[in-house]
Image (cartoon, rainbow, N blue to C red):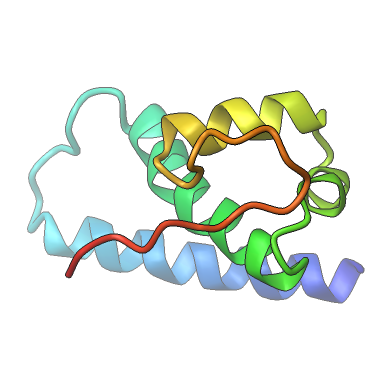
Length: 95
């Protein structure tokens, strides 16, 4: 687990460094922390749902959150059809 966290931390650090380089010396937009959390949350939840075959109970357990919290986040992020089931269909966003 420690190695997984270390690898993930390195990947995130690399992405953040690239992001700051892309700003070319300009200050990041206000609310950077919230923007990053929102940017990461959707793909994180989406990938965990894929990993668990869209089982919300398992996904919530892996994410360390209550299943109802996961459902609310899924709806807010457009990842759920809104049905109250353990297995949901992740909506594909149009390209």
